[in-house]
Length: 98
Image 1 (cartoon, rainbow, N blue to C red):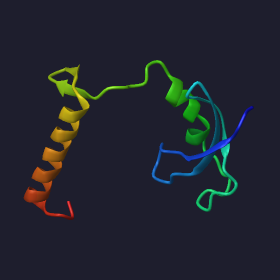
Image 2 (cartoon, rainbow, N blue to C red):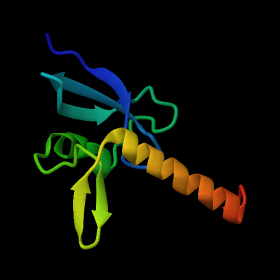
Image 3 (spheres, rainbow, N blue to C red):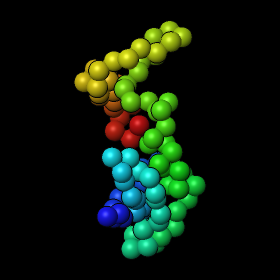
Image 4 (cartoon, one colour):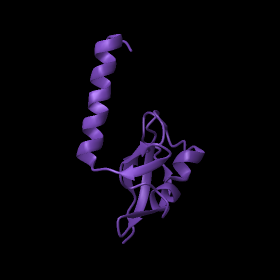
């Protein structure tokens, strides 16, 4: 049985309400969620294309770090640690409003 599941779009800061049908953990259909207080059923181009972005075989699935003119795959722990260190350095150098 096909069932619409409620979720939110993550492709911009609006986080519009979506309803999706999935098959084998892949989005196959999407529509705007009319019950969403934020978007009230509206679905922009990005939201309408979310299945394409999720299912695209060229989608990045691992963190990559730029080293010179190329990218190298790194672990999630390493990526998150490096990001946290850069945020801490920015806060220390430029304050909490930076």
